[in-house]
Image 1 (tube, rainbow, N blue to C red):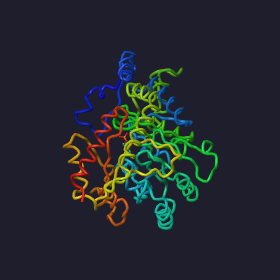
Image 2 (cartoon, rainbow, N blue to C red):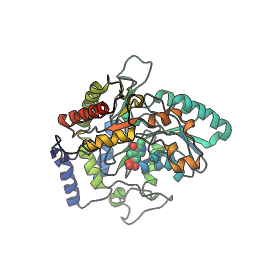
Image 3 (cartoon, rainbow, N blue to C red):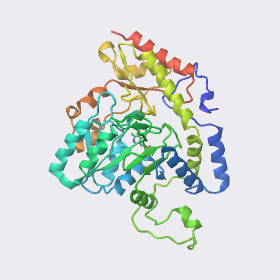
Image 4 (cartoon, rainbow, N blue to C red):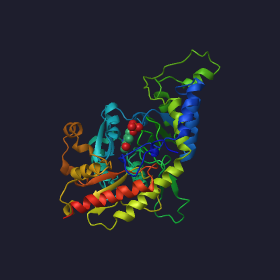
Length: 413
Ligand SMILES: *Cc1c(COP(=O)(O)O)cnc(C)c1O
């Protein structure tokens, strides 16, 4: 049973997010600690193999965060000083900051109103413009599968191919997520799992994500060249992993530094948690989907509320987030007050995301204006993320629903 779920969900505060940690995870950590191997070693290797198998990817490389993974993937994709990487404004700052680590520039694109994923028409416009003004300095697209719903990957891959761009997916929300290629009859044959679609995909195991190791991440790719570069750069540019270093026939003290690498390796302690979480991923996913369905049917008809839209019902939605939108013209309060009223009644909510063009650093560095991103600027005012995690029982889900109705009831116009 989940540790945190022991608390009485009838009365206690329902937090916005909680990792689902059971005895399996605790035992896995204890046994790893007893094994004497704490950092990257056999458990990490096992976790990589199991995760790679779960998404069907040829190469899976464990890292200590998705941020580190995105940095490594863009570096391996050849992004360098003064290069450009296209990314949606509707994301967490990590997606964009890694381009700055490499001396490049993120180029922000507005999102589509229904999915809040990168707008492919705007994306194409920006690509054509940048190709004209900066030619080969435009290197990559970093789409984000917001909340666990896949982007328009067919269109994005087509654009990438036409303009020789790398596609590095921010898949922090997208485990497990799948896309069905459009315009093809046999759905199952054309289903592809996120993690095998773009040139590389980067997953997060941060405490709030769909599987959690505290901090952690995974990069998957089909491309051996990318995998080799990421493997090298995630551990100081040392030509072999620690594990190989201690088991190969070379003297155990011997290694070679061939590049100025980073320190992004995942520990065996985290990997042990990851393996235990991975074994439960389907039941986690089923539970989140069931909660999403309960929310949908409760809120769909209410004039003050708008439920998240799933554009393609055949795609697998990871439901990392449940983003409700408020019809503000029907309410006498704003989103901020709505969240405060929810909290006062014992339900934690959050906001995903504050679009990057509204943050001081990005706004000032790239002279960004809300009018340049009309959809994101408008939708930001009315999004509320509701709790959605497997350890929520039906009582808790019902309490969230009733609390939403209570607040919109009190403040309805
Ligand atoms: C959580 C998150 C990240 C960063 O993940 P870490 O593992 O914490 O580095 C990146 N992008 C998005 C969209 C996220 O939600």
